[in-house]
Length: 214
Image 1: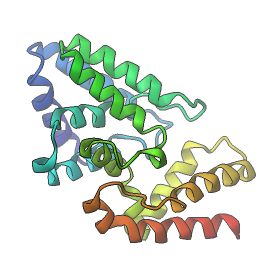
Image 2 (image 1 turned 120 degrees about the horizontal axis):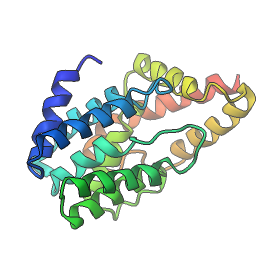
Image 3 (image 1 turned 90 degrees about the vertical axis):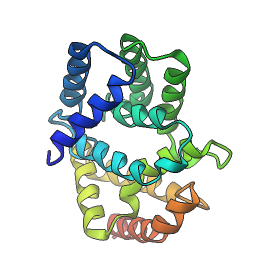
């Protein structure tokens, strides 16, 4: 993990705004790292968290509830088991438990949970959602609009996370997801990220679809 020190400092800064118990802050950070460093993770790891945080930095002036997005970023994939379909619900519950230990107020906790649950189906996020919500979802999808070499690396890492699934089953499920994305009017729900990443995302999706169907 190239950005370990930066991530540690970022967590410390965020957590210290709500919790004065340094031992608790440290123990939570260690738990976060333990989860995201699980051997079964090849994409949904701390590098993914770092990428989102760096993109959020670029839009900080436009964000209404910055700490909500930051906490949601740290916790949205804290539970990740490719055998299960309730990772988002489990992650939201884990976030609630940890944030309550930190004495974070319930309104913020509810908002964090809402953002995490929205990652369950990125395609269905409405344009009527808050800018904060749409930005968070867009940041979670940044890899779709990355240059092709990075996208290929992502594509291979996702396959590794589902390596126990036979190829013909994986292809069918993956194609369904890709076609849902490419069938939407806009993959990215904020204007600023749509203008920057939408075209490349569609090229990447078409590239993978072509690989899976030939």
